[in-house]
Length: 446
Image (cartoon, rainbow, N blue to C red):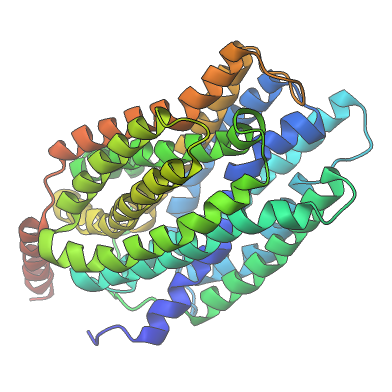
């Protein structure tokens, strides 16, 4: 197979910018929008998030099965990205709209549109991630593809959401109008980028496809130990930044009493994330993905715990520790997505059935589950500690916000570090698996 061209990597990677305009807008601001602007009680927000993930538990394997049995001249996965991009954008804008309805009808409205967004996101996002397993089988190329994806996802996507949302929102007379305008802009940009990526990205890995029945999905997942362990690590690592980001706007608004600093904070995170992205492929080549993931996890944990004890008036030290954590968090985010496609070959080797969309769909579900549980727990914990929107918070509630912003993410990161001890798919074993799969294919052709 010919080496990947820069154009191929760019065309695929930029799609994650579009994906993350959805992910991060919802992760950063959706809970705040619902509680402080839309006017939904915290309990209902928590139930909404959990119900949507139950539905994902049904739709994700169905979509994985459908994608793995798709065969078009455009490939297996690209058509879903192109077709779903525009509806996905429309739904995002609708999520940040405040309709003139009664409280009960507003609940019905947000349930319909949030669940619909989750379903369409599955239709687009799972095929997009599945392409990472069929764009190349080379481990180093996969690491590079993952790095470029994370550049667009974290450096571009997350930074833009973190730095631009509040300033653009503040240009409007009301937060309601501001959030709708911002969501509309992000929806348009996302649709354009996803359609471009869906048209331009190429599915280059051609292997004999194994037709399997729907009932075989469970053994495809359950017998893939590498998939299960990495999914646990991904769940914990994702929970680190999901909880921190979900409570971030509350932390700056109520603890630091300066909401505008949130955008300033993310401007400082940009160079830190960029440095982490530059260092990751260099360090991955030297130490391997698993080792770098573990190192990043423990340093991130130390950073979160240390930041908790920084005096509130020492903004420089607060930002400095956060930047160090952002650098090593990039190690984790990039390597975890670089490890995901490797579990496809592991599962093929272990079960004899080749499927990209089922294992990657399982990762997708794990990722979304971490987002939902992380945000839902954040809301539950705030409610438990007496949070009332747009009111001065008690000391107990402020302590809860501080715990969610610093201590809980640190605990999740320690858990991620521990879980990776059980991940056995290193570089040597992966190359051995590729060799055995190649021998099997030659034997079957003989």
